[in-house]
Structure formats: structure tokens, C-alpha cells
Length: 440
Ligand code: ADP
Ligand code: ASP
Ligand code: MG
Image (cartoon, rainbow, N blue to C red):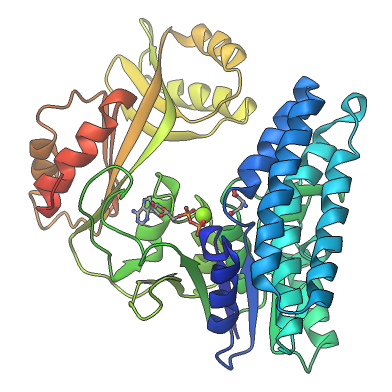
């Protein structure tokens, strides 16, 4: 059995949905995970914002736009009048549901219900299309099996037992369709796996039911060596280890949701990244297999805050770091990078929450300096210590970029560099040229 996940652009129009329907009919038993059509979740997020502000007119305008866009999709996707009508009726249900939310009763629950509509719609459309094409398939409602616990982690036991039951109830079905991104939380309310979370859904399902492979189909032929949105020339990487892919995803390679590799890695299930527009290209295989001892890629993660705690008394004396870490622990804020000197410790966090209470507590241990709008540039590969020169090459490439922090040696897979965000483009370009000899 395999998982095939298709992202927003891969289902972004009637023509794309038809391509997906063709790609999934290869005779293998599978669960197809769909994102919302591209742009839809952004529109739904704008609706949420408007409802929070109490701007009902904006809500109506966005819903009208969505209605028009989807009417075109329906017209182009279905052949018969009967199926077009069924699709329009289904859509009408979603629009009126969104419009039913009133401003005085708009809480986080309603917010997440609005955000869930995109995946509910795209899977309904594909399922209807398959039905019109007489392709035998079944819809597995993600809200019936995908659940996160109190910590926001996937409840693997719940997912596994429910999915196994649902698959058993449909022994004659080889093609299952389900929603990415959406789930229930430990209260049983509708929730989601954060933006880009459909990749995570695919990996969670794959690990829960122990499939042979998880395929992530998107609009590019696999993980590239650099961010194609920033630099001119990039190239695909044919193989990555789970550790390398996890680092790249976590540190900003948008092609994968930050934690999506984790369940597949735990279950040792290979993840294959493929291009829907060019399905014959090999893409990237992510597995436990060694992938070569060299620098493979760079990625960048924005929205970082650096905090320096400088102590004039005990400095890095026994117990100092523990106390500092405990402050972060109490505030449930995780640390990405850390460097120390005799007189200070610098660390980075990526939270958007108010950190004033955290800073106040840290001030008990020393002078606290904060730099916001920082970016972590992460260089990933299998960086063997026996093969010197990696750090020199990286720093050489970045010779004109002021560096705030460097973290090297935390693992064999990663060198992280903290810079001001306005220098990100310059840094990624310099690395593209200096490390990969590609056009910046
Ligand atoms: P989907 O909608 O299929 O989930 P995403 O937009 O989330 O697709 O991810 C694919 C995009 O990720 C690509 O179009 C590309 O612009 C961007 N991207 C950023 N960094 C990388 C990288 N290192 N390799 C490949 N794509 C990347
Ligand atoms: N539709 C969601 C988003 O746009 C989830 C996803 O595409 O993976 O973030
Ligand atoms: Mg994505």
C-alpha cells in the first residue's frame, strides 16, 4: 500500500484534478491525501481575519470570489449536467456554512471550521469526479481518524486503530481519498496540523498503517539544493537521508511541512518527492540509505528572535544553563540554536507569542539582549569531520555577510548560521555560488 499526497497546485484547477485522477490509477492500493485547491486556504484565512474584525462585507466578497472560481472548476471538471449540479450543491453547502458564522459567536472553534473547508471541498470534488468516471473509490473522512493530543502531537494509536478499522470495513476498495491538514484535537473539536500540514497528514497515515512508501506530489521535481523562490538556478537532489530532509524541512524548505518527516522516519518508510507536472522525473527519495558525504542543500527560516543572556556573576558556572533552560521550559518555548561563551549564552526561538514574561524571568539571571527579525540559514548534508573544509567553504562564501551566531557540531547534518533577515537573499545567493557553483 502507498500514500499519495497532492498539494494545492497539484489540484489547483479542473485540468490538474484530472491529471491527479489519472496518476492515482496505477493499480496499487492507496490512500490519496489532498490539500485544498491552491489559494483557497489563504482566502479562508482572510475570511477568518475579517470575521475576527467584524467585517461581514469582506466575508461576503471573498465567498463570492470563491464561488465564482469554483463554478469555473465545476464547469470544466464534470461532463454531465447531473454531476455539475451535485458538485454545485455540495459547494453551496460549504459557502452557506461559512456565511452562517455570526460575528458575536466567532471563536477559535469556528475559525478552524472555516479553515477546514478547503480540504473538505477538494476531496469532495475528486471523489465526485472519480464517480463520474466510474472509478471505484471511497472517501475516508479525516475528521473520523486524524487526531492530535493535548501537546499538539499526532495521537498515533487513535489514528492507527481507526484507520485500520475503516480499511477493514472496505476490503474491496483499492483507492481511498482523504483530506490533508485537518484533524480533531483532544477535545474532539475540528483543528488542523498548521499551514502546509497535508504533508504531515500523509506521513502520519503512512506511519500508522505501515505503507511501503509515502509519495508527496507537488509543483517541483523534488527537494532542490536552494530555495527556488530566492535564487536563480537550483538543482534537484536525488537522495536524502531522513535526518537531512528533516533538517531542511524544519529550517525552511517549504516543499515539506516542518515536522512532516518525523512519523515516516520513526516508521522507516521512504518518502518520495515528485512533480505532478513532470511525473517521469525521478524527484527525491528520502530514506535511511546513506546519501553521499557532501553538502546537499541550504534553506532559510525567517521569523527568528535571538536572545543573549549575559551574566556578570556566575556565568557558565554549574547549574546556570539548566536554570536558563528551565525558564524556556516553563514558558513552553523551544530553542533552535544555542551558542555559549564564558560570559554569555545566545539562543534563538521562533515563537510569535508575546515573550515579555519570558524575558522578565530571564533577567533574573543576567543582562538580556534581544534581536528580532533574524533568519537561520541552514546548510545540510552529511558533513564528516574527517573531511575538513566544510566550515571554511561556507564561511568563505559568506565573507561579506555579517553573522550573528554559528552552530556547528550539533549533528553531522547541519551547520546553522544566524543573520539579519534583510541579508537572507544575499546569503542564499552567495552560498548558491560558493557551495554549488550555480547562478546566484
Ligand atoms: P504544495 O502546495 O504542493 O504543498 P508547496 O508550495 O508547499 O507545495 O511546496 C512547493 C514549493 O516549495 C515549490 O514550488 C518551491 O517554490 C518551494 N521550495 C522552497 N524551498 C525548496 C527547496 N529547497 N526545494 C524545492 N522546493 C522548494
Ligand atoms: N491547505 C493547507 C495550506 O494551504 C494545507 C496544505 O496545503 O498542506 O496550508
Ligand atoms: Mg506544501
